[in-house]
Every structure is written in C-alpha cells, then in structure tokens.
Length: 337
Image (cartoon, rainbow, N blue to C red; front, side, top):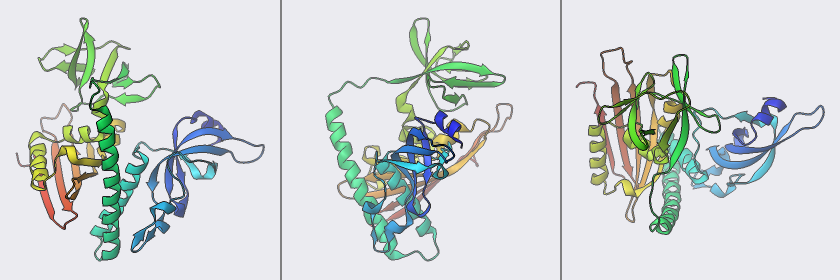
C-alpha cells in the first residue's frame, strides 16, 4: 500500500503485524509523509488479532505484557500495515483476547500430547476474563433496564448492477443480497413491513405478498440482527437450535449466561456472495456463579442454487467443555432426511 492508497484508508481499520510482538487491528488516524522516506501511519489500537507468543510462559499467561492496550495510539512504519481482509473478525479488545486464547486452547487440546500445565493456565485465564466481562455486562444491563427497548435500524438503499442485487449504506459499504434468514424492513403504502429476501431482487412477507424495490429505494435492517449471537441462533435449523438449547440446559446454563461469542460465519455470509460452501468454528462462552462452559461449534453449509431441486446440506457439531472436566458432543445434520 503506497502513501496515496493510505490516504484513502484514513478512518478505516488496518492490520498491524508486528511479528513476535503480535498482530493488532487499529484505526488509521493520519498518514505521516517525508520526502524520499516510506510513509508512516498514526494508529489507534482497537483489538488483537494474534497475541504475542512471549506472553505464554508455561504456568502463567502474562496478559499485562501485551505491548498495546485498547485505544493506545502509536506510529508504525508502512511495512507493518496492511488493509483488513473481510475474514478478519472485528471484536472489542477484551473479546479479541478471549477469542485468541480460545483458539490456542483448541489447538493445544487437539495436539497429540498437549501441555497439561498450559491447558490449565489457559482455562484459568479464560475463566477470569469472562468473569470480568460478566461483571461489566451486569453493570451495563442494570443501567439500561429502565430504558425503553425499541428497534434501531441501519439504513440502506437498494441497487442492481447486472445480475447482482445489493444494499449500500451511507458510507458506500455494500451488503450483497442473498437468500438467508435475515429480515428486512421497508415502507409499503405508508407503513413499515418486514419480510425476507427471496432472490432476483424480490422480497416476500409472511403473508406471501411480494415487494420489488426500485433502484435507490430505502431498505432497513434491525441492528440486533448484526449481533453475532443472534446470527448464530438464526442460522441454526429449528431442530438443531432445539437440541443446542437442550444441551445448554443439561449444563445448567442458558442464553442469558452468554459472556462471549465469536461467530466465524458472519464475514463469510456478508462478503462471499458467490460462495456456496461455508465452514468454520464458532466459540461460545457461558458463565454462572457456579461454572464456566466453553462451546465449540463446528459448522458446514452447502447451499444449492434456486435452479437445483436438491436442498441445502447442513452439518453442526457442538462440543461442550466445562471447567469441572465434563465434556459433551452433540451432532446435527439434515443429510439423511
């Protein structure tokens, strides 16, 4: 990325790859240039992509030695800065640390001979950080409990380009329209109505009536639908969701005990309009006063085109692990239906 391209990225998130010191996401505040010298970027740190290896010290994890905290500002040479790939998930600072700790935990557990000491250290730190987040969430909820809960919408306009249909927000960010579980809201005869996207530029309400917007028409999406956990639940088949909730109950937790959700499907859905196969791993953390539950959700989706008579193939594998050593595996697939 040269200095001219960098100027266009001001206000956007860039990846700061510092090698052994870790990889971070930060907002480009300004571009510093000098004649005949590489440009530099003034960056405000927002989250962690990969934790520094040196903080893992066998029996302890030196979180306090991470070089950058949330909202720290520093100047970096251009060689360390790249644009963010859509597949790099954007999370809060503490959530990003939790996600990378969990990824390391899973890698070690899948190792043939994992270090029991490091596994235990990871479990302690994941539990401690989720406890901190749980206390913070309780404080926020208590402050908001008397506030009126009304839908908050993101505004988009409808557009067609060749055979592609998409929505565009006020900043020019595009959201490809694909057949999914998403709900959309539009103005029809003076009132707001809601429905799903059927394909070929057509939206359909539950009563069966169809809506074909004109170029530039306003389409609204409830912000809650962008919540990673809401998307996770929506993308599960009803039977899979019912089975998942049953297993949560068996582990004495529920949706309200969620502390952290990393959803690997989000960017695949929003930035892969030509992709028909989705796969990955989601990480969910639940905590009560009595226990801590980590869930790995391995998923695979193979979507058929509207012209094919076959149905989509769905595979879900849930691995529940508690801090007390209990482990449960649950599977769901529609391949045999």
